[in-house]
Image (cartoon, rainbow, N blue to C red; front, side, top):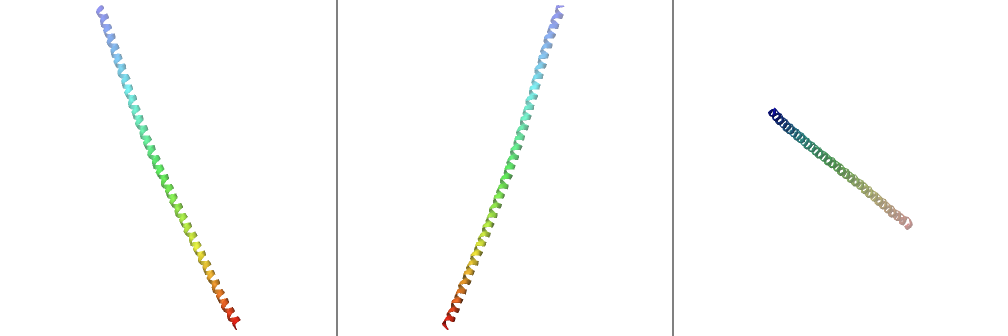
Length: 120
């Protein structure tokens, strides 16, 4: 009977050891699963951040390109306006010069006519 008690005590101890080993294994397994899941989520987050950063840089580059194009267009338009204004001013000056030349010619003709009329 004592032998049965020792055997059942030994079995209980072995059972306790195996349950503890199983519990330790399960805890390690769950910890490893959680760690691998955390690593996977961290990689996914980093990849998403990289994609977002690239998208932002691409968007920023696109905006800078658009701003540069707008500035070039504005400068070109302003330059065309300045050329048109300059051409208009030159045309006005040429017109005023022609008017003055015509006035001078008319005055000369009038003086000549008066001198011939008064001289006779």
